[in-house]
Image (cartoon, rainbow, N blue to C red; front, top):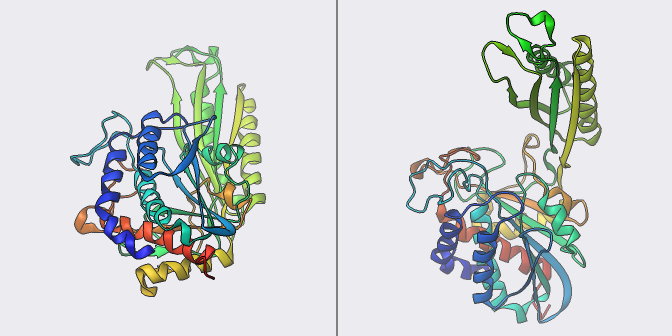
Length: 395
């Protein structure tokens, strides 16, 4: 079946470009859902719209009883202003598919087209989900509440780009057993002081000074409290405070992220951020409101499912274009982890880094582009995995 995907290349590209023009963020993606539903209707697929967000869950029932495989695509975009110059660039100012979720949806639709046309040959069912809010690590949990995992035996997801960076040539797939991505969580610290005139700082409590001390001290956690053999990242990505050069404000906001590949390290990072920030604020006569916004745990691929995916991908791409090892887990995160916490499966990466096509720009960049030539291959990998997992009706 998977060989038919190559004939769908233009179709998949058209879908990807259509979605690229209408990026939406978070949970509420009305245009994106309408676009995808219109395509699913054309294919005659059965699906339901989520009640809790703009997600879509559907199923293709095979010709004979068997297992149920879940295929997932995320569909939300990022709050990034596009700067690619593409003729199909974002029509929504300040929003962009800068992480390739438009291509994920397109590749899944391509796979579903082929699988639906051959559903009578399948022994089992193909569940599918178009998931919102991956960028804020909340969408998969909503999909699970909506019943996406009910009766599922295995789950697979595919991300454009390489977990190993731009070193992998375009069209190479990586799928590794065990932990392949870190947890990712957000912390928010509100430093509270007492505002006053800049000429008389002794009359107030300076939250800017406190915030600076907090940011510098937080870096000591990973360098002095976490073993060097335990991967961990703590990044402060945003500081907001003040409104005039000669006024000490009453409040400063700090936000950042933590990453870890082990749950105890993840919890220790969060605990110490709160303790240190509150302790420093108290030492300088201020206070802190602390929020830990738990995102997603580490992405841990099932070894058996990762091997199945690698073997299926090798049929499509050639064994020389399938990578099954990595030196260390990628410190990026993915809420696909929640699916893997419930059922065995594997999360894969399809490289689209081709400098000649300006498609080696990092994800989350305003100039991010992909090599569209790989799109049919992503669809074919989904189909090949499904064929191998469910097996033909005659098996």
